[in-house]
Length: 305
Image (cartoon, rainbow, N blue to C red; front, side, top):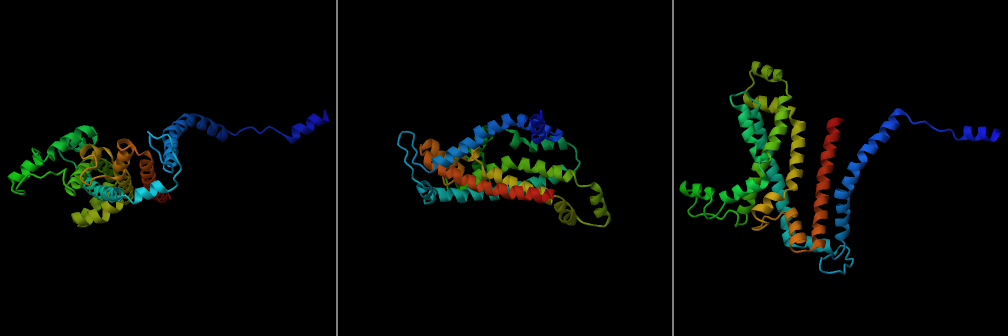
């Protein structure tokens, strides 16, 4: 009897608090989502990372370990170095114009005028329309034989002969960039419009009473009030544009010097069947994105603090 009493006093059963019970229930609910993420995100990333250290071809059963050879081959490839430059040009220039156009249109859409709802709906069309449909129309517009852009430029006297926009280096990248900006500005417009609607109207009324002009109101009230949202919009736009694949692949398939890291990695992996080099490129893309995501998380923490 004494022994039993001693044992019970030595190892008392701790009852869980309500918070601990809630946490356990929460983990149970999250378990399916975590399992899906592990299967569709974590596993492919680890597999690609592993693959990048082997000579991996689908027709060759021998897959010897090659250490950093794939990375050395990738970074000494002129096309990959050009794709890095194109990716940053596409991401930074594209994001700049998306944010600037989005901000301008958000300011317009924040004003009251007849048909504002219809105007907002029309401005959202580039984002709502299917990518394939949009790119097909733009391909026709940029066509070097019968495209509407060539027809207009020729009739207005800006060009002497029709230009193959998607077949010339420089022009092809600029054309793809224009389409990317056109498809991406509605997201920035909606984000910034939400920020503008959160600014108290009393601030604008007080500024007008004190005799402030349009520029003073914009630079002293609108921009400072939108600073946090602008920062978030810029970094998110860079991340989204950095990941762009559909527009470039559907318009040029990376031809005429328009390859970005994503399209080139896809070409190496699924067209040339060089999974090892494609995996090395994908890991490089992941490192760049990790840097952007780190900047994004730091900015979010600062905003919360």
